[in-house]
Image (tube, helix red, strand yellow):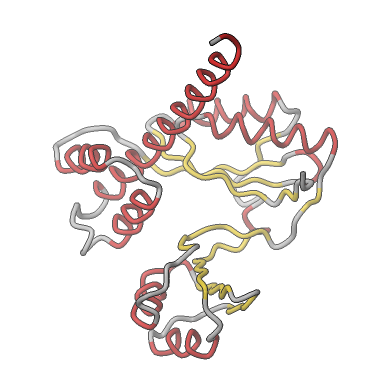
Length: 241
Protein backbone atom coordinates (compact mmCIF):
# COMPACT_ATOMS: atom_id res chain seq x y z
CA UNK A 1 0.00 0.00 0.00
CA UNK A 2 2.75 2.44 0.99
CA UNK A 3 2.69 6.11 0.06
CA UNK A 4 -0.46 6.00 -2.12
CA UNK A 5 -2.41 4.52 0.79
CA UNK A 6 -1.07 7.23 3.13
CA UNK A 7 -2.07 9.90 0.61
CA UNK A 8 -5.58 8.47 0.39
CA UNK A 9 -5.81 8.44 4.19
CA UNK A 10 -4.83 12.12 4.33
CA UNK A 11 -7.34 12.99 1.59
CA UNK A 12 -10.10 11.03 3.34
CA UNK A 13 -9.34 12.67 6.68
CA UNK A 14 -9.40 16.11 5.05
CA UNK A 15 -12.75 15.34 3.38
CA UNK A 16 -14.17 14.04 6.67
CA UNK A 17 -12.98 17.16 8.45
CA UNK A 18 -14.63 19.38 5.84
CA UNK A 19 -17.90 17.48 6.21
CA UNK A 20 -17.83 17.77 10.00
CA UNK A 21 -17.25 21.50 9.69
CA UNK A 22 -20.12 21.80 7.20
CA UNK A 23 -22.49 19.77 9.35
CA UNK A 24 -21.57 21.76 12.47
CA UNK A 25 -22.18 24.99 10.61
CA UNK A 26 -25.61 23.95 9.35
CA UNK A 27 -26.61 22.34 12.64
CA UNK A 28 -25.86 25.57 14.48
CA UNK A 29 -27.57 27.74 11.85
CA UNK A 30 -30.68 25.54 11.83
CA UNK A 31 -30.86 25.60 15.62
CA UNK A 32 -30.62 29.40 15.78
CA UNK A 33 -33.14 29.92 12.97
CA UNK A 34 -35.65 27.59 14.63
CA UNK A 35 -35.01 28.84 18.15
CA UNK A 36 -35.46 32.49 17.20
CA UNK A 37 -38.69 31.86 15.34
CA UNK A 38 -40.79 28.76 14.78
CA UNK A 39 -39.69 25.17 14.18
CA UNK A 40 -42.26 25.08 11.37
CA UNK A 41 -40.51 26.12 8.13
CA UNK A 42 -43.85 27.11 6.58
CA UNK A 43 -44.15 29.97 9.08
CA UNK A 44 -40.43 30.67 9.43
CA UNK A 45 -38.88 31.90 6.15
CA UNK A 46 -35.37 32.05 7.63
CA UNK A 47 -35.56 28.42 8.75
CA UNK A 48 -37.00 27.41 5.40
CA UNK A 49 -34.10 29.04 3.57
CA UNK A 50 -31.51 27.33 5.79
CA UNK A 51 -33.24 23.96 5.37
CA UNK A 52 -33.19 24.31 1.60
CA UNK A 53 -29.48 25.16 1.66
CA UNK A 54 -28.73 22.26 4.02
CA UNK A 55 -30.54 19.75 1.80
CA UNK A 56 -28.78 21.12 -1.27
CA UNK A 57 -25.46 20.63 0.55
CA UNK A 58 -26.55 17.03 1.32
CA UNK A 59 -26.50 17.48 5.07
CA UNK A 60 -27.71 14.17 6.61
CA UNK A 61 -31.27 14.12 7.91
CA UNK A 62 -30.17 13.18 11.43
CA UNK A 63 -28.14 16.42 11.68
CA UNK A 64 -31.23 18.40 10.68
CA UNK A 65 -33.51 16.41 13.02
CA UNK A 66 -31.14 16.88 15.98
CA UNK A 67 -31.02 20.64 15.44
CA UNK A 68 -34.83 20.79 15.34
CA UNK A 69 -35.15 18.69 18.50
CA UNK A 70 -32.70 20.93 20.34
CA UNK A 71 -34.59 24.03 19.22
CA UNK A 72 -37.88 22.60 20.53
CA UNK A 73 -36.37 21.92 23.95
CA UNK A 74 -35.95 24.26 26.86
CA UNK A 75 -32.59 25.95 27.34
CA UNK A 76 -29.78 24.75 25.10
CA UNK A 77 -26.96 26.80 23.67
CA UNK A 78 -27.33 30.54 23.64
CA UNK A 79 -25.90 31.39 20.22
CA UNK A 80 -26.00 34.93 18.89
CA UNK A 81 -25.17 36.39 15.50
CA UNK A 82 -22.01 38.46 15.25
CA UNK A 83 -20.51 40.24 12.27
CA UNK A 84 -16.85 41.23 12.08
CA UNK A 85 -14.92 43.18 9.47
CA UNK A 86 -11.27 43.33 8.56
CA UNK A 87 -8.57 44.36 6.13
CA UNK A 88 -6.54 41.74 4.32
CA UNK A 89 -3.36 42.04 2.23
CA UNK A 90 -3.23 44.14 -0.91
CA UNK A 91 -6.23 46.33 -0.11
CA UNK A 92 -8.62 43.41 0.33
CA UNK A 93 -11.59 43.62 2.68
CA UNK A 94 -13.52 40.90 4.50
CA UNK A 95 -16.88 40.53 6.24
CA UNK A 96 -17.17 37.54 8.57
CA UNK A 97 -20.54 36.34 9.86
CA UNK A 98 -20.46 34.17 12.98
CA UNK A 99 -22.79 32.34 15.32
CA UNK A 100 -21.22 32.25 18.75
CA UNK A 101 -21.93 31.50 22.39
CA UNK A 102 -18.89 33.49 23.48
CA UNK A 103 -18.13 36.78 21.72
CA UNK A 104 -14.84 37.25 23.56
CA UNK A 105 -13.55 33.91 22.32
CA UNK A 106 -14.71 34.56 18.77
CA UNK A 107 -13.13 38.01 18.42
CA UNK A 108 -9.93 36.72 20.05
CA UNK A 109 -9.73 33.80 17.60
CA UNK A 110 -10.38 36.08 14.62
CA UNK A 111 -7.85 38.67 15.77
CA UNK A 112 -5.28 35.89 16.08
CA UNK A 113 -5.94 34.87 12.45
CA UNK A 114 -5.51 38.43 11.21
CA UNK A 115 -2.40 39.06 13.33
CA UNK A 116 -0.68 35.89 12.10
CA UNK A 117 -1.18 37.08 8.52
CA UNK A 118 -0.05 40.64 9.27
CA UNK A 119 -3.59 41.94 8.72
CA UNK A 120 -6.04 43.66 11.04
CA UNK A 121 -9.59 43.56 12.35
CA UNK A 122 -11.60 46.70 11.57
CA UNK A 123 -14.36 48.45 13.47
CA UNK A 124 -18.06 47.90 12.66
CA UNK A 125 -19.01 49.61 9.40
CA UNK A 126 -15.42 50.17 8.27
CA UNK A 127 -15.73 47.62 5.48
CA UNK A 128 -19.46 46.87 5.14
CA UNK A 129 -20.21 50.14 3.34
CA UNK A 130 -18.05 48.90 0.44
CA UNK A 131 -20.36 45.90 -0.07
CA UNK A 132 -23.98 45.65 -1.20
CA UNK A 133 -26.24 43.39 0.88
CA UNK A 134 -28.42 41.60 -1.65
CA UNK A 135 -30.66 38.65 -2.42
CA UNK A 136 -29.17 36.90 -5.46
CA UNK A 137 -30.73 34.32 -7.76
CA UNK A 138 -29.32 32.77 -10.94
CA UNK A 139 -30.83 30.20 -13.29
CA UNK A 140 -30.84 29.11 -16.93
CA UNK A 141 -33.22 31.20 -19.00
CA UNK A 142 -33.21 33.90 -21.64
CA UNK A 143 -36.57 35.49 -20.92
CA UNK A 144 -35.63 38.67 -19.08
CA UNK A 145 -39.04 40.22 -19.71
CA UNK A 146 -40.80 37.34 -17.96
CA UNK A 147 -38.46 37.69 -14.98
CA UNK A 148 -39.10 41.43 -14.73
CA UNK A 149 -42.84 40.83 -15.03
CA UNK A 150 -42.71 38.28 -12.19
CA UNK A 151 -40.80 40.69 -9.96
CA UNK A 152 -43.24 43.53 -10.67
CA UNK A 153 -46.27 41.34 -9.98
CA UNK A 154 -44.74 40.29 -6.65
CA UNK A 155 -43.98 43.92 -5.78
CA UNK A 156 -40.25 43.21 -5.51
CA UNK A 157 -38.01 46.24 -5.79
CA UNK A 158 -35.62 44.42 -8.12
CA UNK A 159 -32.20 46.08 -8.34
CA UNK A 160 -30.90 44.43 -11.49
CA UNK A 161 -31.57 41.64 -13.97
CA UNK A 162 -28.67 40.41 -16.08
CA UNK A 163 -28.52 37.84 -18.86
CA UNK A 164 -25.09 36.38 -19.56
CA UNK A 165 -24.69 33.34 -21.81
CA UNK A 166 -28.18 32.09 -21.09
CA UNK A 167 -27.89 32.54 -17.31
CA UNK A 168 -30.17 35.15 -15.77
CA UNK A 169 -29.13 36.79 -12.52
CA UNK A 170 -31.66 38.62 -10.39
CA UNK A 171 -30.57 41.03 -7.67
CA UNK A 172 -33.12 42.16 -5.11
CA UNK A 173 -33.11 43.67 -1.61
CA UNK A 174 -32.41 41.04 1.08
CA UNK A 175 -35.75 41.77 2.75
CA UNK A 176 -37.50 40.78 -0.49
CA UNK A 177 -35.78 37.39 -0.68
CA UNK A 178 -38.89 35.34 0.14
CA UNK A 179 -41.17 37.25 -2.22
CA UNK A 180 -38.64 37.17 -5.04
CA UNK A 181 -38.00 33.46 -4.75
CA UNK A 182 -41.71 32.62 -4.58
CA UNK A 183 -42.32 34.72 -7.70
CA UNK A 184 -39.52 33.00 -9.62
CA UNK A 185 -40.62 29.50 -8.60
CA UNK A 186 -44.19 30.27 -9.63
CA UNK A 187 -43.15 31.81 -12.96
CA UNK A 188 -40.53 29.18 -13.80
CA UNK A 189 -41.65 25.99 -11.97
CA UNK A 190 -39.27 23.69 -13.88
CA UNK A 191 -36.19 25.86 -13.45
CA UNK A 192 -33.52 24.94 -10.90
CA UNK A 193 -32.02 27.93 -9.12
CA UNK A 194 -28.25 27.60 -9.45
CA UNK A 195 -27.69 30.49 -7.04
CA UNK A 196 -30.22 31.20 -4.31
CA UNK A 197 -28.83 33.22 -1.41
CA UNK A 198 -28.65 36.40 0.62
CA UNK A 199 -25.08 37.62 0.35
CA UNK A 200 -22.68 40.55 0.33
CA UNK A 201 -21.35 41.64 -3.06
CA UNK A 202 -18.28 43.90 -3.20
CA UNK A 203 -18.73 47.19 -5.02
CA UNK A 204 -15.13 46.94 -6.24
CA UNK A 205 -12.58 44.12 -6.25
CA UNK A 206 -8.87 44.11 -5.39
CA UNK A 207 -6.65 42.05 -7.67
CA UNK A 208 -3.81 40.44 -5.70
CA UNK A 209 -0.95 38.16 -6.60
CA UNK A 210 2.34 36.80 -5.28
CA UNK A 211 2.91 37.15 -1.54
CA UNK A 212 -0.35 39.07 -1.06
CA UNK A 213 -2.34 36.25 -2.65
CA UNK A 214 -0.54 33.64 -0.54
CA UNK A 215 -1.19 35.59 2.66
CA UNK A 216 -4.83 36.11 1.75
CA UNK A 217 -5.38 32.40 1.09
CA UNK A 218 -3.71 31.58 4.41
CA UNK A 219 -5.93 34.11 6.21
CA UNK A 220 -9.07 32.76 4.56
CA UNK A 221 -8.16 29.16 5.42
CA UNK A 222 -7.50 30.05 9.07
CA UNK A 223 -10.78 31.95 9.39
CA UNK A 224 -12.78 29.14 7.81
CA UNK A 225 -11.28 26.67 10.29
CA UNK A 226 -12.98 28.45 13.20
CA UNK A 227 -16.14 26.72 14.39
CA UNK A 228 -17.95 30.00 15.05
CA UNK A 229 -17.55 31.23 11.46
CA UNK A 230 -20.58 30.76 9.22
CA UNK A 231 -19.81 32.84 6.13
CA UNK A 232 -16.92 34.91 4.81
CA UNK A 233 -17.36 37.57 2.13
CA UNK A 234 -14.47 39.40 0.51
CA UNK A 235 -13.46 41.54 -2.45
CA UNK A 236 -10.23 39.73 -3.33
CA UNK A 237 -9.59 38.86 -6.95
CA UNK A 238 -7.12 36.01 -6.88
CA UNK A 239 -4.96 35.01 -9.87
CA UNK A 240 -6.44 32.25 -12.00
CA UNK A 241 -4.43 29.05 -12.00
